Length: 80
Image (cartoon, rainbow, N blue to C red; front, side, top):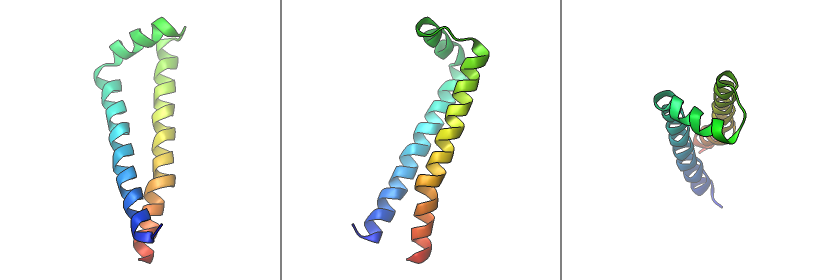
């Protein structure tokens, strides 16, 4: 795999993952009650815990995107 190909893969991967994170955040903000009622049927979870799990999940996903996609992408941009 060449550096150019790896940089392109990391760039597109970052865009796709940030899009998924944005989609998750928008759903959480705009359809919170729908999401909570759907998950409450499956799991015995309070609304506070549901919010906490979602916020923590989004934060972990964002950190993972930054560390595993965006930072290596910019590192490859710098060396090229």
